[in-house]
Image 1 (cartoon, rainbow, N blue to C red):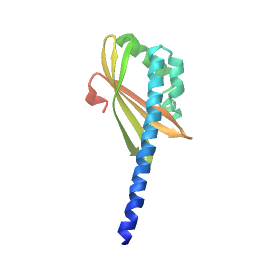
Image 2: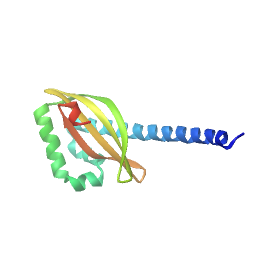
Image 3: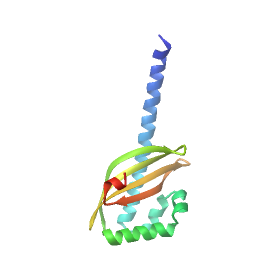
Image 4: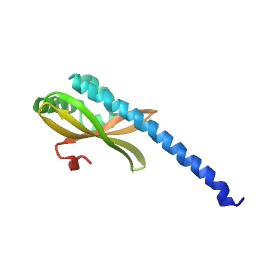
Length: 139
């Protein structure tokens, strides 16, 4: 057996392992996103803050997060449904981040939203949250 034929099974195993790990990471982030949105549905903004990464709070203070979520609810009404549309991963500054895109329905309209996650010490946290009526502005 040639060397390249011996390496092929190892390469395939590495690819499969990467896919399995990635799917597990996306599943964890999806669960966190669901928990975050459940807090928003219940207007429990303080509990929603537990899902934010320290980087997110350092960039945007907690009070601004809270005020932004409250004001969003005032203008859009109740969060009626959350639909996951897509997910992706990207690497920036040698740090891999995961993102999930949503199409969410509120009493007074539809919003396209994006949550970005980072892993720290084995746990994922939200580092970024963006929303807009125009889906191209959150992709």
